[in-house]
Amino acid sequence: MTGQDGAQDTALAWARARAAGPLRTPPDAPVPDGMIRLAEPDGTAAWLVPRVPDTADTRVLAELGLAGPLLEMPNDTARLLAATLRCCWEDPHEPPWPGRPAAEAEVLTVFGDLTGPRDEAAHRRSAVAGLRRLDQAGWLLWDEAAGAVRLGPRVALWSGSDLAVLRQLWRSINFPECSPEIITPTRDVTGGAGQAPAPEPAPGPGPGEDR
Amino acid sequence: MTGATIFEPVLADLSERHRDEVLSAFAAVENSPDPVPEALLAALRDATLRRSVEEMLNLIGRTLVRAGQGGTGGQARWTSGYRDDIAARLTAGGWNSLPAADRAVLALVLIHSVAIPRTEGTLAGDSWVDGTPTPVEELQRRSQIPRGDLRQSLSRLRAAGLVRVVPARPRPGAVPQSTAYLPGPQFHRLTESARRRLQEEFILAAGPGTPLAAAIRRRRENHEGGAQ
Image 1 (cartoon, chains in turn blue, purple):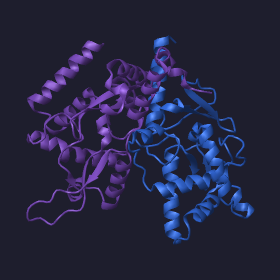
Image 2: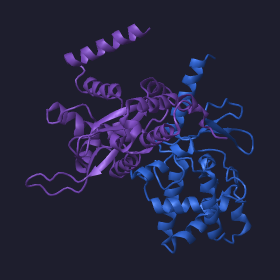
Image 3: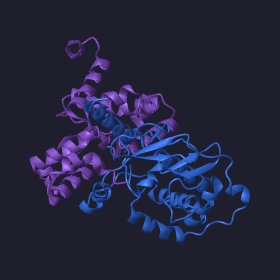
Image 4: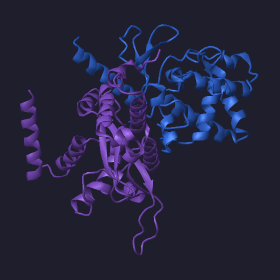
């Protein structure tokens, strides 16, 4: 492979990730320049995630007074990601990826604590919409059929300072006292993201933006 | 694990200040939903630094797009889009295609908001962002898509920045309409060549037997022949 071909393949890989979110690949696929490789815990696949310098991420928009990308239901979406983080990030001294799978019911319980009392149907509706949105953007992996949720490969991009804030958030959220059967999901979530339909996902450090 | 090495060939020779300015401009055009006024960023105003931003974007399959003047003062604005060769490969590879219903709804918005006003001569320029808002009632009447599906399509297109909601223009004597749609800010990201191809596709679809359509087909055949 010549340097020219390599540069073209790198450009195409970055463009694919821009179009569809983190790329799910075979575990031994080559890693394009500037991307990080995140192995699935069971070794069957890996994710390729583009990484830009910290000074070139979405934080620049706020510094310049520019509006961030439109995000539907930003508050509920952020609460749902917080609930997933609380359930799936077992040890906040470790990196959040890959974390552990959590039962959907467990995440919804924490989400309910964060939103406050709501009509059951409205609670379910906003949770499902948030799960779908975050799954499409690669922030979490939702296996709808199995009723299981995991953190998505995008969380590996959180910087040290992001993680310091998120650790405080993690400690401030109560963990639900669940019965064992809803803590253990019926099976592992192994995929599903990377098929994001949005044309130009805005990659960024948190769901308070976007894409 | 810095991952920043891909940009080092561009950034290595820049002073620390210029490096920061180039990175800020790169981040702004890549992430801002709307084009960025060049007055905001030194690396967009200065042609040499702007070339460095362009080189960074090129490495990852993107390019700098001049979005034309907007807002007050008429200053230039910049955004980024896919390189034409990369866009062609993404499309050929089936990446990022919208569901058929969403594509149909988007095409209707483009036809009613931009293509028809441009044909009638009420809309100048080659931008696909400005135009005449298409009322939601018009979309319901023309799309043959069940109302619930249309609403979901519009919601997905809006979340993706492909359409935006504006107040419908009241017509004299008509009942005020609640909502209308224009193409969304993502259309700023089309390169000049992508904007032309989109216009040509509408001409080929709407008037395949016209001399204009024949000229487009001839030029494309010549271009493909020349490229081989």
